[in-house]
Image (tube, rainbow, N blue to C red; front, side, top):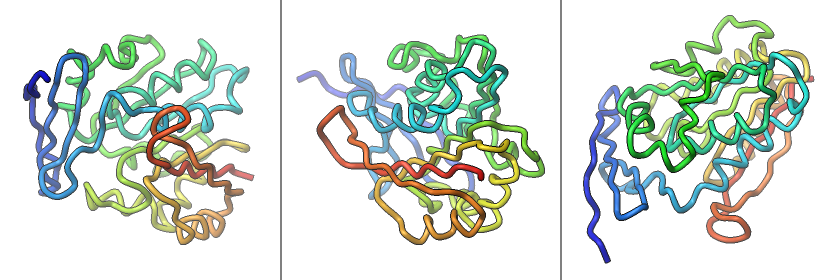
Length: 225
């Protein structure tokens, strides 16, 4: 078996640890320093795609839809969102770490078909929360995959996104009938209750990391009434 080759590293803000991008033949891996280990792998991405498939299902024919993707990752969520919406849509992808975006402009970009090259895409380098505060009715879908679930494990500032304050801000940022979709490694009944308290109609879907097999992940789907 070929060895892993390190392609780059990046510091997560506020001492969140070091991200490392590695490649082995056609396989890519992004890992976090410490006990968390591997965060993403280019062989297991179905649940990241399903985040967009489920979160954008209501936008197939909606013209001029605006979508926010929180978390660049390996580009699979962004690519699936672009496939799910019309040519008139705008998709804003936000990531705290500029190196991750650059990795997706480089060799990592081939994994998801180079979605950053799509003219519908705008890139925001910074906290996705900056796009969601005081933006009443601006977005038709918000797709979040910025951590291991509804708590800030890799970056403590992510906690705001899942707090009642952050959840309420996201609710206000959505258009009527708009959808918040959140990727999680596991179910979370407390977060479901918080979404309902903010006014959302909530459903939790179980998806697999590969089609029909692999680890089970959760997609929280919260629709603005």
